[in-house]
Image: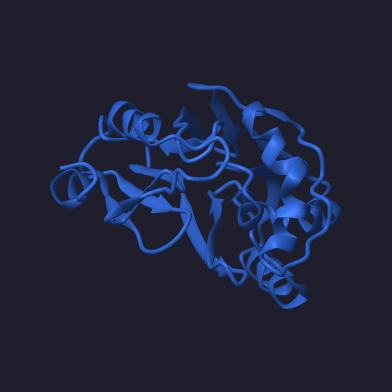
Length: 211
């Protein structure tokens, strides 16, 4: 699997495009905010001769779904997320106004992802891990074969997600990280919703919230 990272919007969210030899690709947390960023996403997809077949959300805070409407209209894809994220999706436009930003109404989901659900595209299988705490319905996507996990805003390099927004809970987040993420192999690469990559082993040894 090839992994392409694009950093979008004033909130600097990581959007990931996952592709394999089939030519199919999945987009995780599409945060492209304006026409220039829409073009950046399309240029990447077209330059690699990819066919988007899945739009996935780790959670539905506004910065992670800015581009969902564009992807829906461009590629006829609806997003997949956990059902507990529906309040965040439905309130995203109003939340954007609080940041002095604007966004199109996010499309309704294609369906809902549950814990331990396998998500398949092309020749790739991702395992959904339910990791609430940053939001009520946060999920991570784990690829055992490629040794990586996409954690959204649950776990960052040297930090963890904030828990002071609706649906957040500090103790719940720590429990999610310890039970679902830190149990992965130490060499697993962590691709977070913001910031650089890290590994599970590095976070176990150095993350001040977890040591």
